[in-house]
Image 1 (tube, helix red, strand yellow):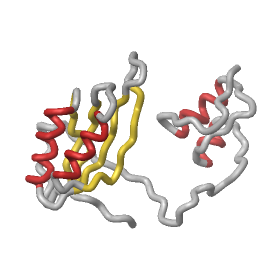
Image 2 (spheres, helix red, strand yellow; image 1 turned 120 degrees about the vertical axis):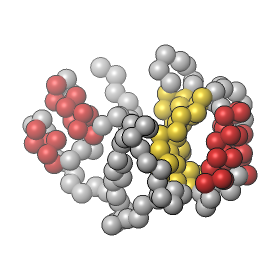
Image 3 (cartoon, helix red, strand yellow; image 1 turned 90 degrees about the horizontal axis):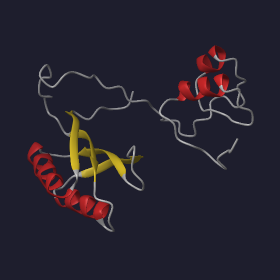
Image 4 (tube, one colour; image 1 turned 60 degrees about the horizontal axis):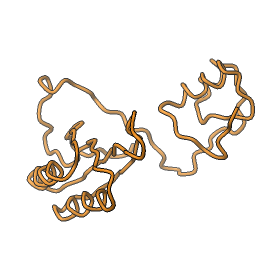
Length: 159
């Protein structure tokens, strides 16, 4: 079986542990919680591997759009978009978003299923005024192949 020479991203830490167990993989490790290790009979090689003291997990409340009330004081949004596969397409998106006064606090790419060298991007955008976000969204609608707003909410703090 072919092994990647380094880390590989998966959709879920516990699912990675489960796959190692079910496929009886050797020489492969997963970054997962202690409960996942116990459930799937895996050895814990290195506990507490996070390197940042302020490491945290985000939790979101998900509602159907029809049931969701507008967030009071919204100043952050999460969205997915994809661009054409051409030189400078992502740079154009980022430049236009920045020109609207938006801080891009997260950008992560995901391969588009069934395509080669095409990616979805998950982005978190922070803004001072809702108008800035609406303007950035209008810009994205003009240049991205697709845009989907996942949520608009008030930026949380760390606890």
